[in-house]
Image (cartoon, rainbow, N blue to C red):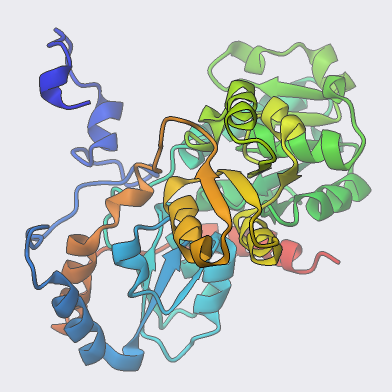
Length: 394
């Protein structure tokens, strides 16, 4: 809704609201800080040509990464597209590129900095492009959680497994405590490995991916899972609950995937007979259970590539990707719709727009390094250890 459509409320913006709007400063937060510099106007008709010219001037010195959830206007300038981990590995495979421009969000750029050489500089076009899920687990909160596990007498049995969608601090905690990282594609393999190392898993920060993997793919029950709420004393759990649990799930979620409901699935089935429901494993358990297919963004793309002509699909993931896939496969008579009636972009991912990309490329072309994402040495070392454990998974 526009401002004109909403009532005037007598409230003051909170620090969190200001951070989400990119009007605050918190370098340790995924929500980022203000972006310096004067951006070109979005209405500038020469933006595309300016981006092309700056990228051409930089040549092989720049490598542009575009996450699947980015806008089309940005994706057109990406040298490669993919999910967060694929892009970080692609960056590491291009050592000749002095600048890695990551069109994604903050934790992704951190991962790229961890995996690339010291000579390469990772740049995020808008420092306010963060991830609300990653922000749901801070280093201080996780350290306190570990103290709770220690007091319950279970810490020695717990192996942390952190989703790729986490800050460098959380990845470092995971590495320091003998754990590993996972993606939505290899979560089962990571959990299988973790249960070979210990009796319990602390899964950070997305409760839904952890629960869906444990119950749907590993045969656990919902009762084997408990949710640790960092905003409650002792996580809202008793020592006995922690002792009985196999999966200790952090109370975090994706703001986009978390909005899909069982009613969304039932509604689209009623509206479109014969439709296939394909959702991301960050969706709620009841949504995943009601879907026909579940998988990562890469899995979603491959499933639609292999789908027969004339098939119908409702996709439960970020709208930019769904819309791009609908346009791509329209010529093959594949009907692709968004799972929910109410469309929803990832608001922070969408902060990377053409003006920010043009400003970034032109600044680099003029020899001015902007918006560099740099992880400190100690954090990088432990985070890299956790990432390397993932890379070594069978």
